[in-house]
Image (cartoon, rainbow, N blue to C red):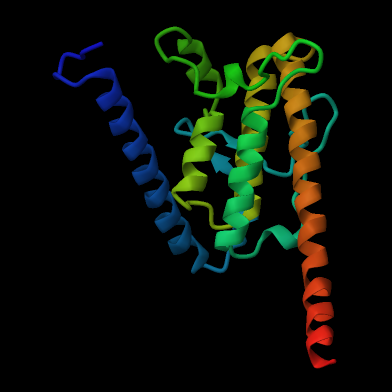
Length: 207
């Protein structure tokens, strides 16, 4: 496919990826400026262009599965932590339905096409796809694990808002969210055990 401006589809997609990364960097800069006013970023409400606000304290559950951050997720995202975020994202992208082998992430990979689903963008405040999250991880745009979790919660919440409870796509989102919570908890356990391993290795050296 060649667009009116002479770009191929591949070139257009590459340009859009760069724009997404540039927009995220600009958002991070504006967040740092707001933090100087001693406001807790986690307490700020998301506001869309029409002035509507969405509280982050509301239950953003899918299928009754809550996903809430704790204090350990507010720290700096180191290179090791970022690798774990990439690993979690890739695991969810390749997650398959038991029995059928169907990839559950297929419909969540990219944001819906604005031309095909114009009503989606009227209803959803912050459209986001799995590949958007993966691109942010690879570009190291997440300043905290809480921010990473918030993006996933937004993705799952968008699904319920647009499709409603009990639909097959919402059920798929529920399975994905359950796996997301499991992977996040698993990585917390690994992180909690690391200091103990370090102490044991130091003891071994002293002997």
